Image 1 (cartoon, rainbow, N blue to C red):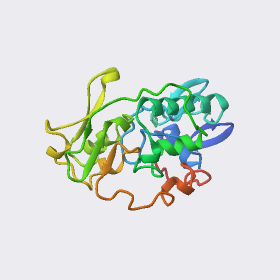
Image 2: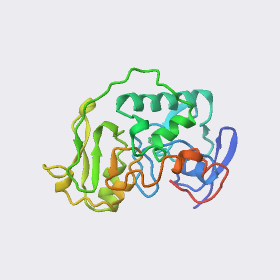
Image 3: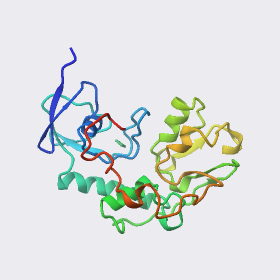
Image 4: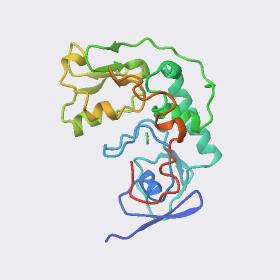
Length: 239
Ligand code: FES
């Protein structure tokens, strides 16, 4: 009972295996759906809402919504694009994302999405938060002012590294990424090679001592828009 699921994505017939999410099935068909908290090899989180699509007219997070026969999915309509754009703009104003002086510039997925959506200045006022920066680890920096709370580091540390170094602490607007030692990151068993360090999509978790080893202008998204490695290439799911 392994029949193919058939659904419509932006008017195109897509076939996928049962159990795949909309985001995965779209990607197998060479269609990129923007995302931030989703990451290949990590359990889906469904928190950032950048991957929102309309399923039979209702908004759903495509990274957690399984495909089903006959559903009609909109991903590239003006309405959906505007919705995603708003989410991305809010992420920018909620934190301190000063790309021109961030080591992650050019490799940052939030920045790359802003370029993809043509965002030059957010419509909303900046909050300019003042959050704790943890520089206690000799090789890793944690800057909560740039954290978008995607939870990639939490899942990677728990499920891949097996360390549980990162968790969320606090509630609501006071929610922050936390570490499992009172003395800060330097008192944990976090290592610079941990997957939790690798998967941060923004400049919240950075490796020290290697800053600008790859010069600006030669970084991942400097010449290739985010998602362009997926678009037009039908193949195994890359998320
Ligand atoms: Fe789907 Fe974040 S990528 S909610």
